[in-house]
Amino acid sequence: MMSIVKLISNRLNSSIKNMGSGSLVVCGGTSPISIYEELSNIDISWSKVFLTLVDDRLVDPDHRDSNQKLLHNHFIKNKAKNINFFPLTENFLSNTKFKKPFDVTLLGMGEDGHFASLFPDMINQNEAFDLNASPKILITPPQGNPFIPRITMNLSLIMESLNIILLVKGKAKQNTFEKAQKEKKLPIHHLIKNRNSDFFIEKVND
Image 1 (tube, rainbow, N blue to C red):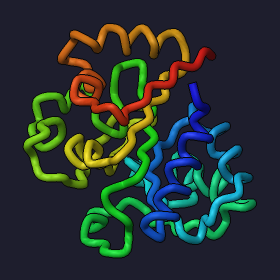
Image 2: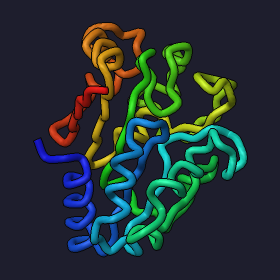
Image 3: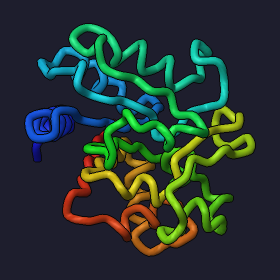
Image 4: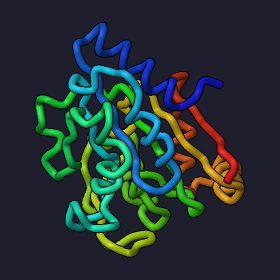
């Protein structure tokens, strides 16, 4: 299978060529760090690429738990230092500059089956998981580890992406992924059951 870095760069280059710009939505966590480091050294017209986060922790941007900080440390540097980064905010959807629909969204998942900041205890919230809900940015109470409030795209907004890449790193997450094929209580079930042909799953061992 084509590497994630190659897949992302190909999709962005194609969009820049055909549309004049490209857009990339990414996740936090440790799983994608090596991808971001590699991307930061790829030759792309990064000044024509828009970047945002699928979710973040509601902390200061320079806080150690901030996904913004993670991107600045590992992605927004080297050849990618001129990328157009927009933090995820409650009014993000009113931003007319950011290219929509998103060209590529890169997601990770947790051992509990969460992705973005859509967690198991939110499974009955229609605005979070119902594809008929309006695309939204949600603010959550404290969730996950670290246990702090979060901001996240809902499923219907994520699914508007032209290409979605799901990174499943490690045996425990891969086991959860297999359970999620049938287990509706696992958030990731609702992502994978609605996938289309431009949905890529990358399983990586620890």
